[in-house]
Structures are given as structure tokens and as C-alpha cells.
Length: 165
Image (cartoon, rainbow, N blue to C red):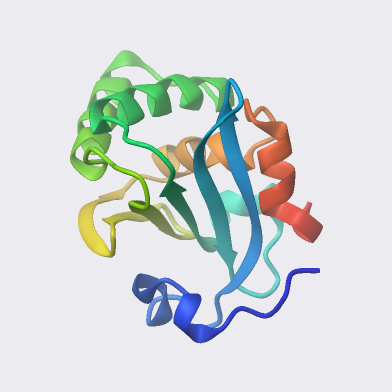
């Protein structure tokens, strides 16, 4: 069981939109042994992992190294294909959205995706809104990178979902 989180550590962009938010789980993504980012899953009471696409939550990534936003967006499209299929028109539209949503990041930068449970997604970089989209298919596939069973990082998925699995 995770310790209680002080209100001060809850991302500011969640305090008004998800007032009952709590930290569900946290984990680290490593690539060839190097830390890429720490991920935190923020959920509301009653969160059910298998039904993540129809529930409000936020996924926060705190980066440990410099990465180009374009590379983050391209990798996201590739990872979304592991979760489900989509056509090239969707891929191009979603890539353009993510290039806007994900600027270049440096160590300690924070990206946060907020999902309302109905397909509305807002992205924040260090607390500032960078992009929004209303697209339930996109929301399911994008957040499925971390939360769906076909995740390429099953240990990270387990750490994020904790007891909600």
C-alpha cells in the first residue's frame, strides 16, 4: 500500500479537475539500464485497471534526461500500435497532436496527460497546457501504452496499477 500523498505533491493541474485524486502507483522506465523517466498514475477512488479508458485519471512522467519532443511523439505512435490498430490518417493526425503536446524535455521536466474518462485528453508540460483533444480511440490507445495488457513495459504497468490490477 502506498503512503498518503500530501496535497502539495499532487500536481496543481489535478487539484481542481480531479479533487479526490490519489497516487495509484509509480515506477521507472529504463532503456538499456538507463533511467528515462519516473511515471506516476493518479486515479480517483474505485479506479478499475481493466476499464481505464472509461475512467478519469492522469499519467505523469518526470524525465531523467533530455529527449526531443518529436522523438517522444514518434515513439508514442509506435507504442500505440502495440495496443490496437489504426489507419495512417489517424497516425498522422495523432502524431501532429503529440508533436504539439510534447516539447523537447530535459531532466526534471514533467509531462502530464489528463483523461476525463470520456475521451477528452489534456496535456501539460511543467504545469502549462500544451494540447487538448477529444478522441476516445486516441485516449484508449495512448494511455494503453502504459495501462493496457500489451504494454511493452509490463513491470512498469504493474508498478503503476498496483492493487488496481
